[in-house]
Every structure is written in C-alpha cells, then in structure tokens.
Amino acid sequence: MKGLRICATGRALPDRVATNEDLSRMVDTSDAWIVSRSGIRERRFCGEGERTSDFAAAAAAQALERSGIAPDQLCACIVATVSPDFATPSVGCLVQRRLGLPEGLPCFDISVGCTGFIYGLQIARGLLLQDSRPYALVIGAETLSRMVDFTDRSTCVLFGDGAGAAVVTLEDAPYASVLGARGDPEALWAQGPGPEISAIHMDGKAVFRFAVEAIPQVVRALLEQSGLTAEDLAWIVPHQANRRIVESAARRLGLPMEKFFLNLDRYGNTSAASIPIALDEMAGQGLLARGQDFICVGFGAGLTWGGALLRW
View 1 (cartoon, one colour):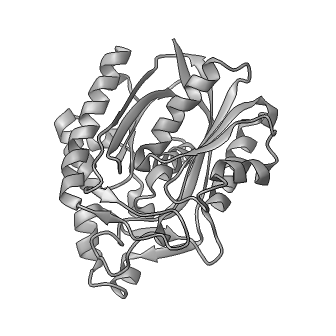
View 2 (cartoon, one colour):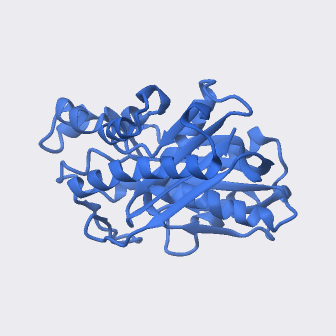
C-alpha cells in the first residue's frame, strides 16, 4: 500500500506572546479560569502588517530546506486556512510567488476549519498517486487573532496565530484515512474573509460534545482500516484545541495521555496550523524517529473531522 511519509516539517510563529494575564486585562477572565477550562496558558498574536501568507511562506521555506528537495520535484502546494489574506489570490498562490516555486505547480487553498491539514494530506496523496513528481507541500496557516471578539471571554482566550508545513511523499507503508463533514453553522462560524471579517462565534458545549466523540471514532476507524493496534503507534497527534477534550477522548479509548502530544498550553488553538506546528515541534524535540507510524486527528468548524495514519 502507498502510504504517506513526512519528509520534513517547518513552522513559523509571531513574535508577540499573549499570556492569560495579558488577556485578563482586556476581558473579564483569569489565568486560573482559562487553564481550568482549556489548558491554554499563552498564545501568539500576529503584529501590524503581518499576514497569513507571511507565516505560510516562512514555514514552507523551512520545510523545503530541511527536506533537501528541489522545488521542481513538488506536485502541489496545498494551504489549509480559514483566515487568508484575500478571497483571491489564494495563500497558496502567494506562497508560490514568495518562494519562487515552479509555475507548473498547482497551488490552492482549502477551507475546512481545524481539520484542514488532514484534508490537505489526503488531497496531496491523491495528487501524488497520479503525478510523476514525487513530493507535495501541505501547509496549515492562520491569523485567527484578527477574527476574535476581544469582549467575548469564551472565545478570545482560545485562539492563536501561526503556520506549520510538511513535505510529504509516497512510501510502501500502512495507510488509512478518515474524512467527514456535518453541516452545522450554529456550532462554530465566522463571516469572511475580508477587511471587515467578523468574529468567531462558537457554541462551546456543542463543539466539546462533538469533539470528544469524533476523536475516538476516528482513531478506532484508522486502526481498523490499517490492521494496526494502538501499541503499534508511536503517537497520536490531535488538533490542539482543548486539553479537556483530549483527556476525555483518551479515557474513551482507554489510552494514557502520554500517547497524545500536546503543545496547546503555549500556542492555543491555531486551527489548521495546529497539527503541523505540533509535528514540527515534536521533530525538533527528537520525539519522532524514521519509520515510526503515528496518527493525526483533527476536528472543528464545518463541522468537519478527519484523521490519517502516517509514517515519519
């Protein structure tokens, strides 16, 4: 079976760190309240003039440099984002121009909320299966701080900015993928994109119930498809939304929290960027070794969900 191997990763984050204490001076909240409900202690906010494409291009450049491949070996550049610079041109096209990628390369955005990176991986695999060029570039990038209502303490404390990228290729390895969608604009929505983009609106309880069901369902389906067991996995890398969600999902799966990588305490919910940022941090910490199999699982606005069994 042709699975997906991640060859290299990269990430780019704003310099500005916004702590819970910082937000408590803007809205009626506290560090204790935020940590107890989400596990988040700080997040990154973009500065004046910084755009989603800036972070996407920086993360992609890092991943490409680390992979050692030539740009003409890419078959696609796919960007998952709900906070693009413009309705058009896409962030993918802006990355192509910024990095000087070949003009014969399809570059485009997908809008799938927090599951975007997972959808992007499956699209990349499909393109790789029918293209002679052996690599694809998948990016998750967001500037969600421009979309939050800083008078709404239930949402403004959750989200952050940044980008992560991965260069992927096909390999003879176990592979499984699950993608799903259930149209539900009441649970989580935002108007946009554009200069007058409106705030993120979320029914926190509805999203929580959805997420704690989605993660176990996706993990079980991936294991069943692949014939692997949880013991065969080096890691489960979830979308970094809320520690309580992951803890509840782990209990339902009967797995220890040590099996799940979390970095949301420092970056918050970066939507489509959260999983590739996590993968790059794991690689930098030496937590991933060549040949390891692991699962990434996402869930979020749409509502959408998805997961992929990958090889490092």
